[in-house]
Image 1 (cartoon, one colour):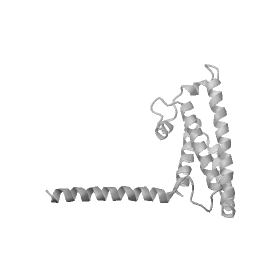
Image 2 (tube, rainbow, N blue to C red; image 1 turned 180 degrees about the horizontal axis):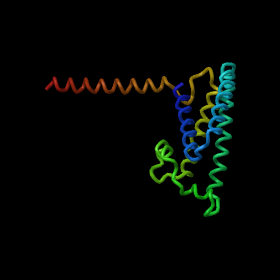
Image 3 (cartoon, rainbow, N blue to C red; image 1 turned 135 degrees about the vertical axis):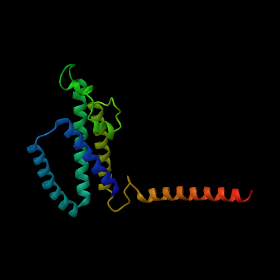
Image 4 (cartoon, rainbow, N blue to C red; image 1 turned 90 degrees about the horizontal axis):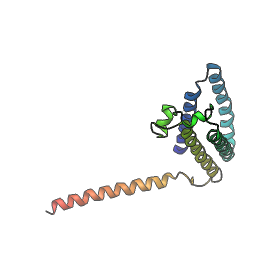
Length: 171
């Protein structure tokens, strides 16, 4: 569940970043919210019926997003110098994007789009993997493995404290 919450937060950052680039009006924002309500309701009902289908569907949407961002990147890189599109090679990315993707102060819109495409590729892989393993442990996010690592670290820390305590009493 945490993995999907992180993915949802990541998608929210995509939305916030592109809103900063475009600054859409009230009608556009209202239509996006309306679309989210309609799609969200239909998706919820679909997920109740078949989570595997929904993850596969999202995997394909993310796959298409990867193709789209790849085309956008190519268009920016191949745009003639001085064109509006070529400006994105040097135009600073919105501050929210530079911070979230750690692009630094010189991070450009092109750098940001590379980062968004990488996110979409990860979401694609996660959703395709989960759709085929609904009855098994998630192959991408294993909370048992995470817990075991945490417990091993805890035991190592406790044993280290015991060794120090024994060492000080033996002197």
